[in-house]
Image (cartoon, rainbow, N blue to C red; front, side, top):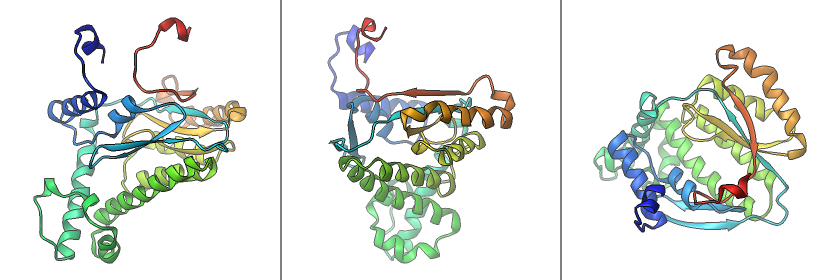
Length: 266
């Protein structure tokens, strides 16, 4: 965005998203989608973005009037590494293999592996043949299909002002990410477990792929000091090598990437 601005290049928000995706897939080599970039660029304060990553269509959902006051907790694990050095791309391939196997079991025409998308395979086929999948691939498919359901349920809960249901869906998503998609590292799993057991945390999950970075959650602002104390009492002792690196931060929601006046934030 900054490069475009200083060079007087006019681009749409979707252009920025797709250029960013090109860099990550063609230059860096990640096998990822456009959800992260879209969240960075399209997000609006107090609204939930619901995106169909197959068509790039999206809608902004207003927060329900009864949604309780909350802040966002961001617990940085202290672990930062290039996703190319993780199993991230392997997980993408495993999801494709799961889809390919479902097509075979269902007697459907087989596609090239890179063209297989679980999104194009009805959940009825998964439910019928899931028990015939090898365990690894059954788990990957289970994460995909249940996550699809959680997204729609979460959008409904947000629109209805139901933060408790929304938060519970976040917890379920986190558990599925760790134990069905089998991403994550011990540091982030510990943080997630602490947040699940801490009063005042509505919901939490890894912020991205789960192989490094942060766990995020929605919390009751009146209890944030106690929440931080719970983490500080356990995390440094468990992982002393990064006790001076990990961070617990709180913030509010805001609009996505944009140009701002620095003076307004001092």
